[in-house]
Length: 114
Ligand code: SF4
Image (cartoon, rainbow, N blue to C red; front, side, top):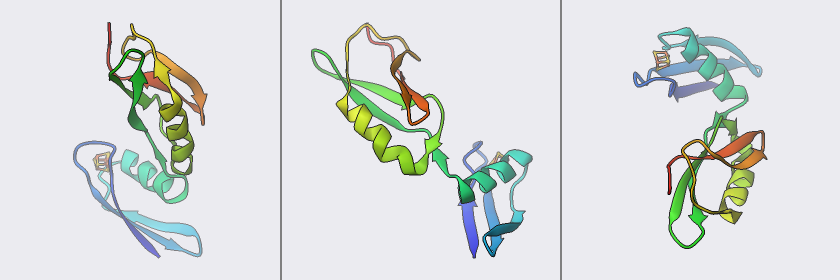
């Protein structure tokens, strides 16, 4: 089985081809650097994503938030359930933790609201 991936580690977006035989990677090609190789290895076996969304602000409005690190792709619905349950009170700084230790990541504010 082969996997065609687009590396998201930098704006170059290299097309990477991963050849898999018997559940093991036998070759990785198309990446222009070691970061791309590591991305491909992780994407095949343990895909992760930074989750971005919005939460409700007390009194109205929405606050953009994201996880402070990538979380396992199969945990995204769990993370979103927590995000959807949050109501945050202003003031909030950029990078402020609005929920901690959610599937191994913190949910942080992506915007300052005074
Ligand atoms: S393989 Fe390297 S150069 Fe290519 S997109 Fe990924 S990080 Fe960028």
